[in-house]
Length: 90
View 1 (cartoon, rainbow, N blue to C red):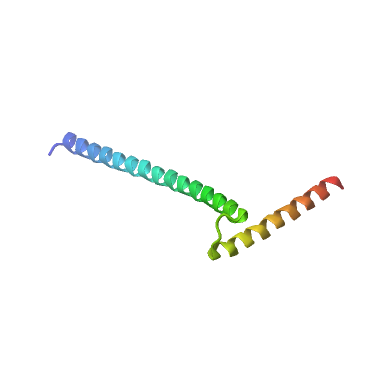
View 2 (cartoon, rainbow, N blue to C red):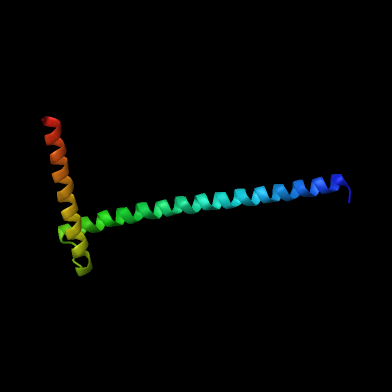
């Protein structure tokens, strides 16, 4: 085998490896994007379920503890925002 054939074979192998790496990167990005879309939909579902629970439209025992915890966290945010406003005013 000539030097030229060896160089061509090495170049072809490198090109094939680069294509494989690019394909994996594209697929990985699509997985990441799709996971983000799933997260967004789960968040939307959560907001909807929370609203329905608070309206009394749905009543399921497994939601109660989560809704109570969300309420506590919302109260904490309100308190912290009040502290921030007080600091800014002083």
